[in-house]
Amino acid sequence: MKVILADEDIDRRFAVKLLWRNYDCNIREARNFDILLMLIKEDKPHICIINYLLAGSKGINIYDMCRKLTEEFDVPVLVLLPDNMTGEHEISRVHFLSSPGAVPQLPDVMLEKMKELTGKYPALKKNEVAPERKKLRKILIADDEAAIRKLLGVMLKAYEIEEAADGMDLEEKAPAFRPDLIITDVIMPGISGWKAVRGIREKEGFEEIPVIFASGYVKDKEIYEMHRPEGPTEFLLKPFSKESLFNAVKKFFVLD
Image (cartoon, rainbow, N blue to C red):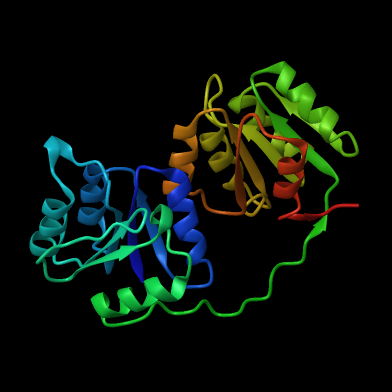
């Protein structure tokens, strides 16, 4: 099932996405109504899930948004209401769902609403055998700030470390060092961490190398959530703790 999730709050979007982790949903994210319209024109979804307080262009309100989506684009809408607010409307193919914080506590509630609007439930993901996690040995750290590279080196001193000072350096050193894991800043001189990783993963044997992106900008986290790179990846918002770093690493590797 194709879903567009529209909410200016990235944490709420993440919380809603967690509800669907066991379902076969292709979720695209928008932080305002203008981006939602852009996405809906690119790939018509089965349903739009939007926050009641979603920002609209030229003062457009939630009811005008719903009418535009249902009448002009023929897409049903599920509106998430914060703090047990109630929504009153006479718009066909629109449901309002009240829940604290605008994040439903039970996915079954949202499932039923989606079934009413689309005529079907999203399918459960097929059970797949998780790839065997190997032991971590070598890490390539890329950041244009030497202090951050040094800090990460101290946190990860149990492993063999190689450093890169920018995106070009990262892309050049990866083939020779052959790391098990890359930890890279997003914005660096020359080319970004995004672009460097794309280049690395085009090389034979590096297609599935795990990467942890790190950035101090919330906007980078939003870009990551909206356009998640192919392959095993995680994102950490700076500053992050040693615990959050190792929790990210443990998603890919068995640690001693």
